Amino acid sequence: MKNIIILMLIVIISTGCNQIEPTENEGEEQKNQSVSDSTQIEEKAKKENIKSEATDLKDEIDISLKPNETGKVMVLMYHNIGQEEAEWVRTPENFKKDLLTLYEKGYRPISLRDYVTGNITTDEGYTPVVITFDDGNKNNFEYLEDNTIDKDSAVGVLMDFNKEYPDFSSTATFFLNGDVPFGQEGQEADKIKFLLENGMDVGNHTRTHANFTEISKEGLQEEIGAQAQYLEEFIEDDSYSIDTIALPFGSRPNDDSLTSFLKEGTYNDIAYKNIAILNVGWDPGDSPYNNSFDFESIPRIRASEMKVDDVGIYNYIEYFDNNPEERFISDGYPEIITVPKNKVDLLEKDLNKEKYIYEN
Ligand SMILES: [Zn+2]
Image (cartoon, protein in one colour):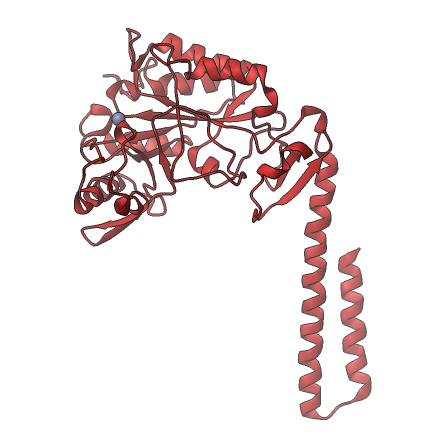
């Protein structure tokens, strides 16, 4: 309907010009005028359209699901998947148990990238969760002799779980340090390709699993930059960059003047830039729409049941069971940020998204 009105307006404007029979120059000016008029009208109509579409979408949001997009998001930290459970090892069975528990309690994985860029596409009523693995151990992703993926490796478990529960995606980020990520030489590129093709990501865990507390400025940039360049060599897609980092030991430079090099720096005249810097402990992360969200310091929760000091995955699952109002609950519309009125103070003020505040 609006398009028809615009068309009619354009017709009226241009017909008007013809009737006056202007001189050549005036005609040119008026033509320009009418073109810019109609462009403005179209622009305005476009804006109104977007606005009314967003308003329409708000009507679709089911507030009985208590969406709260200022709530907390767990970023889980795993290391090894192995046959014997230990402080830094989860058995395949326990890893499956974690996934199933998350599934049943309404959590759905999103990529780290989507989390930090605020592109939360989680279905309405569900809570996003981010899964990460550090150190690129072979048990994270192993090809067997027949060239199939070991079903008991992290990638094997994630893929199989996704087959059984298609609405629980297999997305996860693997933070890789040193040479030969995933421990099978010659298969690095194939593995990274497989991960990216299946919605998973690879991130930086430094060249030598360095402790950053006493590092030099040059050393810090080499640890991050050299590893980013090393990993990018395996990736065909030039648009994909290694731009997330998990800090080894969760360590940061004692010298504050070096902190900015965690985010940006140069090694061998090639620049690197990180859009997410991940810590080792202990809390759930802030919503990316919150004024307290800090991509340079994203906390992670240990996905273990050993020595977790009451701040492990099951402690927080229980915490959110008891405090559901603290948990991020998606409205199902990534372009609209829905929050109950009593949480509105937490929202980032300069958010470039439509907001929907409802009475709770
Ligand atoms: Zn590590």
